[in-house]
Length: 272
Image 1 (cartoon, rainbow, N blue to C red):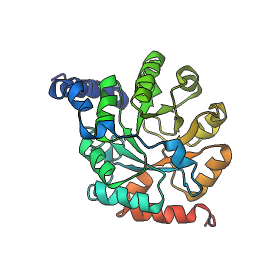
Image 2: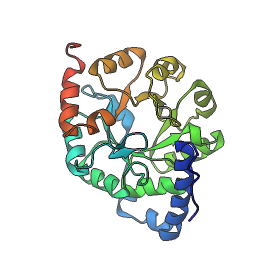
Image 3: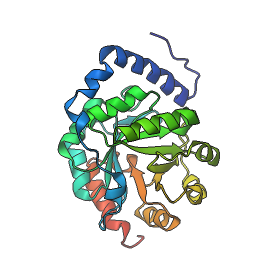
Image 4: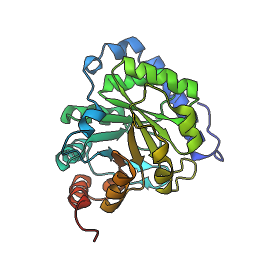
């Protein structure tokens, strides 16, 4: 096995490890086997349709056990109870981490979430290869994530087109104006502004407010990371965002689903 350089940025280390993981997965399970799986033929749920519902919170609630910056966030909450609770609390969609080495996730988490929920599910991972889109479809995902920082614009176009041909929705994640302008293409469904710097994992909501007006209205506008106050949801909606990816704020609590329930109840309440 290739050894990862210890002095590399976290993101560089993740990408290097992911390439090894993808190569191993291709040897273990063929594309044909993925396409023959039970879930591969199911029709995907649409994030746009679920977002447009009259009672939609717009919240994409995330199940995340750990992160490179925080280490273990929650080691006791189960994927079944948490995602079922998120749905009950009003989640518009779910986000499930499938990266094992850095986020403690698993494809089993995605398959389990799919079994117990009937809302859109985002496969949250570092997508570098078209093979991973087949995995996402086979595991029951409805949406895949394309991170502009780690993909060439041509790769984004190619992978977004394949995703659409499979019936998958596509969320493009950007961090700055340059990434946004070079990465937009017609096969995207949503554009997310990640408020977290993937090299040092610092967080600033200024990224969302600066870039929201630059996202064409044909796409859902998603603010990702660093959202911990219900008041922030109201402010982001006023700025033009339709969806809000929230994970750590819920997962750091003993009962993430209960935390989300309380959060949602305060969105349109007082600021106190």
